Length: 320
Image (cartoon, rainbow, N blue to C red; front, side, top):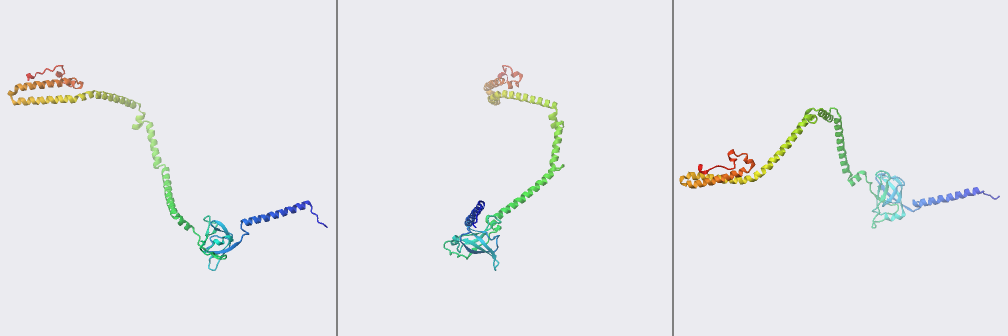
């Protein structure tokens, strides 16, 4: 009896076959991307501790993935022995001077094994051989490498200084907030002084409030302005007088010399009397010129004796 499938059954079967093919294709693609089907060689390395490694952790060279951690065991020497599956294409780069170390992209977590490639002159490590290892750098090693200890010490000192400043500010704020503290007391004093000034108390209050005092000050200011104007006028009048004073002084000096000559002639006796008369006459004329010059100066004219204020000076040298 021939088996007959309905259309529905045929469609379901076709769907299952297609799904299976897609699944197999996906596995193949993913496996190729994960190197599931690539050839691997096993290498070993040893560390003093596990450093957070686990099965499946990445093995890298130049930050490129070249294998995976297969297993982690502790041997009889109390060392952590790590088995690594390395892609066969990289086995020629693993040599006697290659070094394996545990690194992490962060300070904590995501640890992986990093292997440095060996030099071309060094012998190659055969599959199943052991790769030399170095301990993982600790946080203190990184701090020493980048000088973080000194920076953290400076940061600690800065934090201590900030703490002291904060405490001082808190103390100062509490002190200023007291009702009997210096700030509020000073504010109260300022308010009291302001109130006194507004009510006209004290010297400043009187100056600001007393209208009569203001009027007196304004009157005094006007008098001072008038006095300043008078001084300016006097100064302007003295300028021509001061300009003529040197010439007047020279004439007076010449007159004094003439008088001294007369005195000397008197001492010499009467035999020099004619010359004495002549000298006296000349001295009088010089003196008259001086007086006439002084009469032209208003300031000196007002201080001359009444008999010298006349237009003519009646002085006869022979009447001496």
